[in-house]
Length: 330
Length: 291
Image (cartoon, rainbow over all chains, first blue to last red):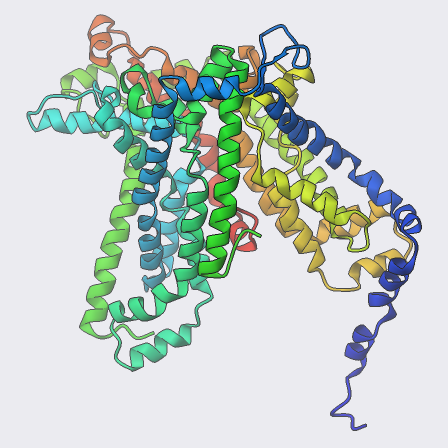
């Protein structure tokens, strides 16, 4: 064999190395008990992890399926309380507030998607196209900041902006000779403020997934397009947008998967008695009924309903995402 | 690239203008909050409630907040959970990832399914609360740590990271007679450090910003983390702003108290953010974070 055609020393060593395949094959051929025995140390290592999943993940799931079909009262244990079949679910669907709560949840989720989906994509494209290096980095740094704040802080900022007495918006209104308005107690303003502040928090950070996709686009494509006389908008249409389309589809499908979680943590901070009718969602209802009013079984049943539908949505949206964009979470 | 033509320059000007506008609206509310936190009642009145930059900053609100022992205590508790929580989580998550990266392990697929399923299906608030109660962890800080001891998604990311390490690295260490624990500590963890660091950073931010779990599982205010204390401070004194201004002419308005509360809450994040921003962004690129 010529030296040229043959493999060079180190490459040949790794490709045919006994270290790589030998032990694996030998272990695979051994009997199952021998294999388990030879891996015993790994099982020992896994015990704490296994214990975590059993205690904090699977035990609660088991409880969910039990408690949802029981009438659990404070003081009576989970396994001593009475089985009542589907009664909790019947109560839920005949209750006056649940249909409204489910409608609010879906509406708020869809609104979040409609308002919050496109702006980060546009912003990512603009960042990508900016010819200034330093300035761009600085601007990105600033626009990411709100993502790292808690919802408590975001609520504080919203309060500072919209409160009657000193909020910036009201100060501008009164400066223009208009009357001050209780934005935070107005049910017509609840959703715009909720969704607007979420957009404020996440618009910058949400650009990252698109920028990561854009970073892989070959710069020569743009250079060739410039030479061919394509202007900035043409390049955006024919190079930039097509190269993020699959990520866009992927993100869109995934957001549809979380249709039944409308951001309960944020709403819990933002809502009040005045805006209840438009603000109450599944998460906030479960928290109130379950923990404040101790309706354990009813709240568990609603939570279970939410999880089961949520699972279906995630599986469905992942399937669609894979079909449309070629990527999924699994 | 060439940006000589006029249309290219116009485009650059337009996109810079739009992005500057977006960034300004991200930053302006924070500056307004800062300004309000430093505005005293006298200046509020004299300038007809419209102050963006106070001419005569009053630090009384900060003095009051920072002299509250509850705030300092809650700060300590937040620091505790933001370090102990992620540290233990990383240990368990890395261990799990290493074990599940061993292809020859009997039952590996079953254990993987056990982990992945929990990403897709969760029990809900009430059953989790009941379990925490059964375990006697209600009103214990450990509840806030125990609940997040393994990051299932992070485990999968690290597992893939370990599987993609150059062939032979792990086998070579095994040939040298390293036990599993030594392997983990001396080979796997150092090599997977970038992925671990990214997951750990996001976990720190998560723990630092959490307040809802503390509200659910704790009822002793002495154990509350900082965000929950801030939340309670923001919610209290919700009386009409102008009224309270006129009623008590003391140096601190409830508004500037609230805004100072917000500033105090953002400060720790703003102090470390500039140094860590790079790693957060890299974390997303590594795939350590759900999109």
